Length: 268
Figure 1 (cartoon, rainbow, N blue to C red):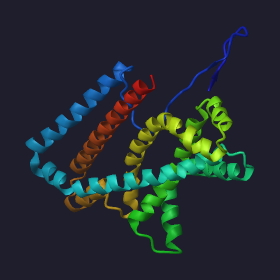
Figure 2 (cartoon, rainbow, N blue to C red; figure 1 turned 135 degrees about the vertical axis):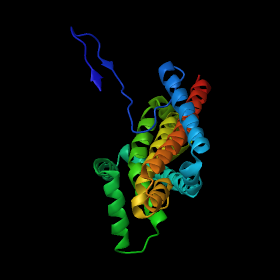
Figure 3 (cartoon, one colour; figure 1 turned 45 degrees about the horizontal axis):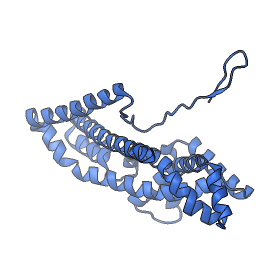
């Protein structure tokens, strides 16, 4: 976004960083740090209160969903690892001088980012099903990584573009070819810039894994729905599911915050 001032004053570039991931509690934003503490300890207190004061049904629900939490993390980890590979290839394609590769990568990004994730899940699941029987878990991982690969591609592109051109010129002057320059010089430096947004995408992906329950994957939400359909305790069940999701997300956002701070200190 460009911000222009009157009277021919110098133009200022304004970067607005807004995503669908978690709000990362940075020490520079005291309000957000305080909000994180209130949210986290409040969620833990609510969870403890429900489990102790009302074990029926909250304790029974809590014992019913742990395997769903494990599946949620499995889908998240497998998807983010595959998405990183897709994102690297896409990011390199987006900055490639080869017009065909650039066009393919750019088109992939535009199409994926223009179609809702839920639609992609349905499409990939049933499209693959026409040719080969794909297990629900594998279909979910493929769909999630295919979608997030486009976002990761933009993260890699931005991270690579942030490296000063002087680094590339210096490497080429030492006799490195383009591939060596990219993988031995540019990417190791770009990784410091890429890592924090990758952590944020990891959190966003974890939240979006709730959508894979429609494919029959027994994640946290799916297990909650199964319990609610048997007991008809919908309010209690989804209260517990929401609190668990919140606690997990807040823990991960704090870990990403710590990682960002350590990287910034290391760079300084």
